[in-house]
Length: 588
Image (cartoon, rainbow, N blue to C red; front, side, top):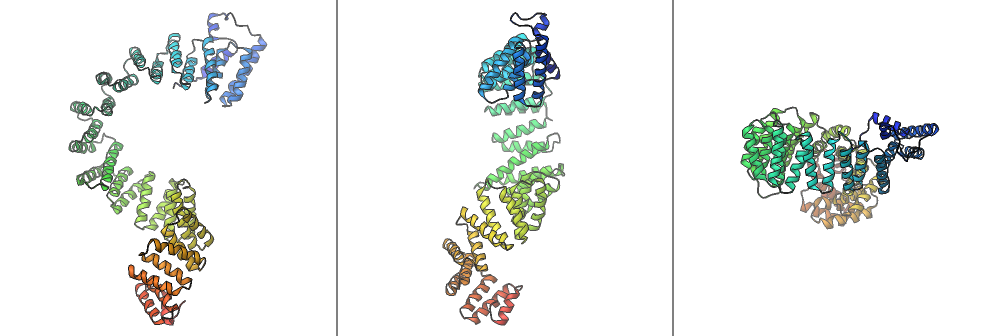
């Protein structure tokens, strides 16, 4: 739509018109036959109300402004300016009734002063908002006939014809503009678009050639034509056109970049790669364009990861392009971002981490880069680094839930339980739209609050997590185990751990948890059977031997219990409590 122009000089003109000096009357030195002369008192009163209205208009208090402008109309209904101002206020509404009143007001202003272009432009905008494009075009056509030096608005007129689906009239209008103002980008590109949409390829090409001939130094017009051809399924013609252009302009780097993309789209991958190698050596081609190309190949590598057919040459070629970028742009963070993405697609996490670290060290403020860095450090269990980098990331992205999440998880793993709860609670607040993530955070909060010995909050967090997914194995395991250690709600703990081994009958860790819950419930014979199953189905840890020894002790098999404790001691020499158990042949 057209934007109404506002200038300080116009405000002055409006003010004078309000006082009864209509623009047309001022020129003709005579009043309209129906106009009644204002008394001096009424003129002063009208001037006061207009000034007040204009003041509130500038303050954007449009209700008060409209009220004062209405008062002006009551005193002087022949002022075109005040009708225009009222129309301008009403046009800001989304209410169709207000827009209709606005149209009536601006039509009145035009009738009173048919030589003011701003009245027509506002009217066209209003009718455009009402989807009454025929009236909009009518007003602009009238303005072009009535007001001199308004030819520049032919482009807006053509746009309204396009909105009204009157394509031929739009073409005629663009041609009118061209005859008056010469070949230019606006009209030419629009005409090309129309011709190509109509399937008139020859006419579209001729229009494009005319623009290129008028501006021979503007390579973007050549690129625009090739892209338009490709979009209109004229890929072979687009390629031929660019090849011809490059024969005449071999240094045109951006044209080579586009041609390489078209080669790839047309299945001519070897030709695309050959051209891209030269493009990546060309310093005149923008880095961002090169980054996009590498990103495209990274995406192909990612797609190959889920495919049975893998083209190793794509990986090698992409690595070659990245190597060129690193040599040419060693201080550009985005180079290391795409390099990190490349290694991530190849599942080479350590190499990807190193590249992302370089990117953030060079000042990258890309959120995905920081998130990938934190993710990989977490995967590689570099929790001290996660804590440091999460703190730095929070300065850039304080409202990103995942940064708080990684921060909380790292603190949890480092047993900084209070810091973990603060970070995880913030992550939870910022994740309300993702209930799956909230449930996962609640599970971690259960662990963190338990570690901080805030057991009521721990139980609440676990319960909230299980309300979302009652079969969450990790939470069922941790919750039941911690309840057993605390010797509270043991019946609930047994129910949860029983559900766990029902779902996973051969998981040694879950069997150990269930055995320990039974032990705390003093169901020693049942605990023994479950513990022996745990030791039979999986790798036996020091904890398993210790738990098994405790169970046997309670069953009166002290010698066998001591043997199990001794086995635990071999696997975990740092456990001083086992030394006491072995030495004193009793539980602690």
